[in-house]
Amino acid sequence: MRIGFPEAMGGRIRLVLVAAILLELIGNFVLHNWQERELLPAHEAREIASRLSDAERVALDLRRRDRGERMRELGGDDLSLNWVSRTVITDFSPSLAPLKRLRERIIQESPNLAASDLRLTLMPSAKRGERDLVGALQIADDSFITFRVSRYLGAPPDSRLVLFLHLLLVSTVIGAALVMIRALVRPLDNLAAAADLTTGGRAGPIAIDGPVEVRRVATAFAAMQDRLIRAMDDQTQALVAVSHDLRTPIQRLRLRTALLRDEEARDALADDLAEMESFIEATLSYFRSGEDEALRLIDAAALLITVADTAADLGEDIAYNGPDEFLATTRPVTIRRIIANLIDNSRRHAGHIELTLRADGPDGFAIDVDDDGPGIPVDRREEALLPFRRLDDARPRGAGGAGIGLAAAHKAAESMGGSLILRDSPLGGLGVTLSLPRGTEAAAGSGSVHL
Image (cartoon, rainbow, N blue to C red; front, top):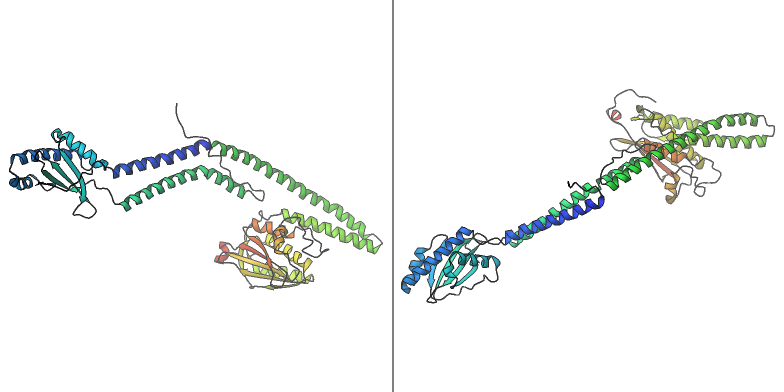
């Protein structure tokens, strides 16, 4: 039976936990063995046992005054021997596992030493950070043969190094677990990113991968996304069709209204029809995002000056502030529609309007529309950007409008990769800042200019 990578989320989580625990156990086992490794290799322990047996036999054959010199002769660079009648060396092998194992090995190699008092301990070496193995063997006449192994190659590492290695092990385990968890949740991040990209009738790409539960959710989300977009398209097309179809009866009503003899009734009906037509135009403007318009290199300053002059010719108190020329690669028709909506919104509620064009960083530009009207409270500004919202308590009643101008401008700005921000105006009313990318062609100043 072949064991594959778990398909379910629970199985993968368990795999991450088991892998992290196993890695921690293996790392601790390796560090423990490294700290508790044997004092000396087996062949060196065998050599010590042999030389201690020979030294004991030689010492017992010599007079006491000759033993010291003879022991020193038997010693060498790696193992020094001496004879003393008494010693202060204490046996620490019962309390230190490596010393205990070394003592057992020496006795195993030379069984004749089993009946003797063999003491092992550790002492600082001449070299800093190292230790020597020091021992004493009590022989038959109760004197001692002492020995010293320099240096003790199995000396425990520095405590700071051990702490560092343990911290490194923990960091490695946590890092590996985080990498595995990241791989586990990446499909969910991709699904969330696809959801964020699904806007304005556009569907974000959905990758069907990851655990079986995530794949099931992604599949269902993709189907739901397709249904929602098709439903939105159907509703949008229906609404646009109805808006267009309403224009014909409105025009017929206009003609019949013009034939009325009652001037007061005629004016009232004409105002109602004008409001209906304005509502239809605002609705169509909201659903025309401008994404189908090609980018062109234009003089944004000339476009805004033309818009301001046209509004002034219609009786608006409007002023333009900005450069005489400003190149930008953008969608002029969409910008004109946005500014027209903003000016119309200000016209309904204010007396004076100022239109300002300025650079916004090296790769963008901004258009400010300020008025001296009552403004919109800070806590109502997000609501003002929603379609078909008329903030009657924030603006004067009877101002008219479909409550869709700011929403249409906001939607069109986002479709161009820009933003629309409501703020306080230095004139005392509402200020609106339209920020848009300028485009690479405009920065280079090349190409033809279109208005």
